[in-house]
Amino acid sequence: MNKTYPLVPCILLALSLAVFTNFVSNNLSSRFSHQAETVESQHRLLAGQPTLIDGEPTIIPQFYNRVLFPALFWMVARLGILRDTQSYLLARLLSALALFLAFLLVVRRAIRPDFRTAMAGAGLLAYVYIFTFNHGWEITSDYFDGVFTCLFILLALERRRGALLAVAILASFNRESSVFAGVIWFALYGVSRTRSIQWRESFYAASVCVAAYASAIAIRVAILGSRETFGSNGQGVISPAWWWREEVLPFLHHPTASGWPVLAFAMVTPIFWWIGINREYMRETQARLFAAGCVIGGITCFFGHSEELRIFIPALTILVFTCVWLEVLRSQSGTGGTESVTLVQL
Figure 1 (tube, rainbow, N blue to C red):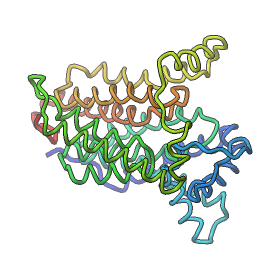
Figure 2: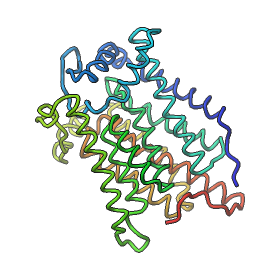
Figure 3: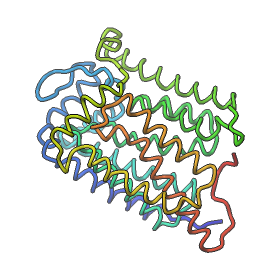
């Protein structure tokens, strides 16, 4: 059996990366300028009140199921030790720590890399997250988005149906990307090697998607009310024409080196390069996981603003996980190892 890395260096690395990414997120000029209203908005989200955008009370229904971080912030603030802003910053650090710890522990359990490979993967994930901070406000669901994606991958690989459904519902308290738990399951098991639909697995995957999204809507209704939840500003689908007109054309008219397409290119290039150089070691399970990441990235374009690169966190987390897995397979091949690191046989 492959020897894996111990817990202590795992925690220290996770803490270091959490401090690094959080330092960047907290101190980007636009985010720092909006920090006070971001802190105030956490209280308002839990109370079902309009959040603040440049001082203007605004209701964005999609945000009112994202109560996991506000609840963490509330618990930290309730201790009475720190002031509001300090409690907020500590909660952000804790959620960042949870992200990198979840990634390192999941790859350790699922594919058993050596610590250097795991460290490279975690470093790549931190690199990706820096680009997702291109939004002018801190979106406090971002770290937990990666945490839950890591858990979805692990539970799907281990075929733990009940646990995956439960975690997907819990993830709905963070973001509606919880539906991607079902997409990952379908990518792994919904189609056989002969390309025929596996109806039992497909039905389960669809059930997870429906339960997760229904939970997100139910949370919004409970906090915000049905009128606002289902109003004109509710969840919509972005058409290619809107995407081209509102996101691509503005960049083409005023291109800059820090425009979102440039940042997106820099964000994904190392991922696809790493996967590309190890593509010969890709087996069926890794190919299916890679496909899941690409499909989720495509789906994301229709339900979020692409210029806010944070919306691609679930897809990119899956692809970074795939990078690490292929590197493990490459190293095993180089040492003549024959033991499989896959947890499932498709």
